[in-house]
Length: 247
Image (cartoon, rainbow, N blue to C red):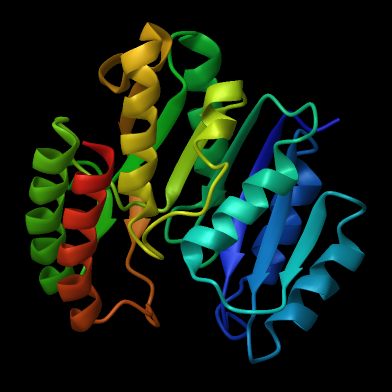
């Protein structure tokens, strides 16, 4: 039985899905179960995913959402589907593999080694000896946004938006995905805000101590991102909404 469930949200990813890499990883890691969520794609994404599922000997599943609801809802529905079993951890990973699949197990190892941790988040910190490749404009916009998110959350968080996160399977972490998110894209910030609410009631969910940002050794900006400049502008308003709701 798999110990870890990883959700891969997909929307019109037919041309970007690296099926051979997913199949090779699934074949080599029987303790990791991959669940792809097709978020109402209008191209051949569903067929590609179901093709992988047929070849993966039960280690890959596909959840199809008939209507596009955004990444937040795709991830939430995937977690609700995958975390109901006996898995020890669940998480989500960008399906374009900007973060390589081989980083899943180091994330899981951190949760094994440090029982106080509930969440491990990938962090795209450009340091010597690490291969972090980002477009300059996206990097600087991201730094401005991360600073604003840190102020709203009142947390010293460096990178809320990296699409590589792993959660210990507990009542509290599942609760954080129980209801739909305010934002289609900033749900990562909202997740931290929800854990912050739990932390006010139970010390075990104090985000200052139960969340760990892990600098990634490799991350590559994959061409074809659906985030545009106008999305960053909209994100500013959504960040304000999140701050007002959870404060």
